[in-house]
Length: 430
Ligand code: UD1
Image 1: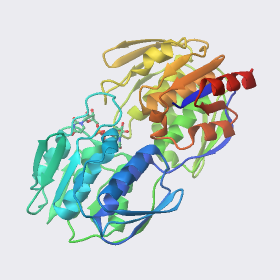
Image 2: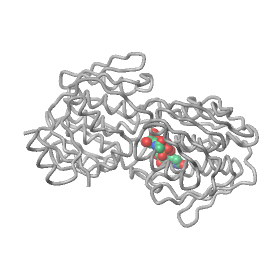
Image 3: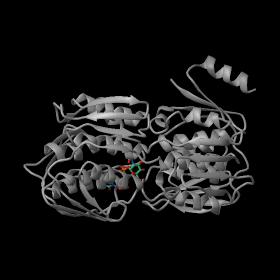
Image 4: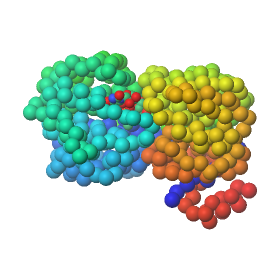
């Protein structure tokens, strides 16, 4: 059982390099099976979710060749099965991207119903609506989603809710459909643009990604490509928040500052200093920060995946802050853990009312999901004394070498696996 042991109190100072975007990587890996030619992908994050997806792809005959830690070559010419039942795949949400990718290429796919972080009910009705509009028959049987079609035909699809997953899934299937597809009320997240760029580099004809109307003209087949994944907006945002919360000074490198606008704006509003460079942002905070109000929204709004990290920062800021979570209904599970560290947060429905406190006290806490886990790490970095975080496998789903990167910024954090190691850590940090 791995845990993080953290001794709080050190401001984070220095430079950190951000990796490739996990959520883009997951969709791009799946999309790479849509050609029989070899696809070369760079800036692939080495995190649990991408590795689980790669394993599932290998289980149906996709050949994945790791060129180095962050580059893979993928060849899907030898696929021998269109059924993904890998037990691990249930743990990741993005398994559903293989539905759109395989349906587009082979007109049939069978994938175990997706799991992922337990942050509320996560229906896939919009994905299904999209596949059906393209002419597929979709059934759910014994926990499997089965999609099949004689042929896929372009269609006009209006999404009832703005969904990242449904937008990408429909885009993939439509790329190899006959004729033209229009997705209206599409999600606009940076990784949607990245997946569209990737598919276009394979010969697809997708226009409008990044706006709420995406137009796809189906092509007969896709070909191989070399592609580099965009930097991870949420990993970058997490380090920005960690810098601000610990009253540090961090240069966060290899980012697209535009993707961080909503996060930078909120940090500036509460009193941090944010400086933008071409491909880096610097976050500095010296004083105690102020309160604010935030509502999570689809891009370009404030990301739901940054909500817990922001809450930790606000829980240490002066005054009363209010966070409304409008995307997922169960995303305040970290509040009980944070309260054990001294935070004063009251949750009413989809709103958290945060009364800022001056400090946190280290405690034993449990990561309830990926981003909330990262938020608890930030809390530990700010707390007096030692914090132990359990269930860090959630954090490892989406952050590559989180502890190593934090240590390089001066944090006292270690991965520990036994009581003996915990004691050793405590002795070392005093
Ligand atoms: C993706 C991200 C996740 C992020 C989320 C919102 C991946 C692997 N995960 O998740 O990190 O938190 O976007 O930015 O990229 N909905 C429906 N029906 C559907 C699909 C979604 O009602 O068919 C609802 C969801 O319940 C939620 C909202 O739409 O309330 C947004 O969900 P969606 O954008 O689809 O999130 P994911 O793609 O699952």
